[in-house]
Image (cartoon, rainbow, N blue to C red; front, side, top):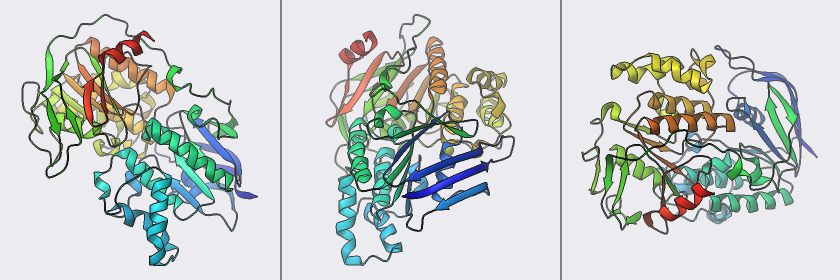
Length: 454
């Protein structure tokens, strides 16, 4: 049964950008699983918004929707979808709109949470969840009202490996029930056993894509440093401690002294909700409601506003760090503030191949483009310590290569880089791994050596 059909779709945002959907056509039938790949900024998320009926600008072309069509959409940034303050109310929102009786809601809400592997109290405030946990929450909020078409934007980037495994099981059961699934994904190999139709969105049109090799994510890139380096000056120290928020149980314990040195890249790996983002924000001095911890950064106790251009932090929500009217002005803002050469802004755009976006509004770019622009604005400063929260989320392979090259250049110049990830980053030559697992933060020196040898 045909659920939705797009025919001859034309759409663009204007404002120095060409049409991103150009005579695009697609038919989705019940029980089918489609995966759409494409370059960062090619229009994949816009296509999902069009299919969901949430596109904010007019488009040309015809859209057929079956009368039974009920669409669920999980966006790339789940924060953009949050409507309520606690977990239970967020999931129940859809049921309330469908007129489900209150005495039937609790069981449905709990069942939906279990399906996505989010085991938390219904009273849990949404704002204490990690980004990956919020993605699961949004999945539960869509599944609770039994959609006939489920749209997913970049699930692999937001979920840890156990979350991806659980999601595969959930999606398989949905397909067996006749639900149609369309996902936008830079790593389609993670869902290769489920997907029937692979598509490449290129030049505004969907082209039949090749079936990827399962579990090939670890070998998509092979980039090595071009210069030898030797870590020298310590830029951050962490004494043994329990990492906790005020009046809460420890999030994790650090049993050994840890340090970050100039000229090295360290990857912080852990599952959703392990505490990676909280640790990075603590090092930057911006994490609220945290107990006093034995941590020093650049010989000072972390505090907002004391490091100037010497410290940079890339957060998981790049739109929180973008506020200028053009991309070029965004990159130049901090350079002006710290009286650094403005030529660095244009230079980095050229290195990233993004000079065509110089006069575009950063607020109208895709999630992945916003991510790389926010990162570029920090790289321009050439900080002594660069903290990156999941820096490769939303980026295609070509942009990952460019970002890796930028990070290697920074390391060669003496910067220290600490980046977080749900999993190891085999495409980047890191000096060490830090792991948060089973409630402990530890240095994984042996695993780092094995990963680099492999």
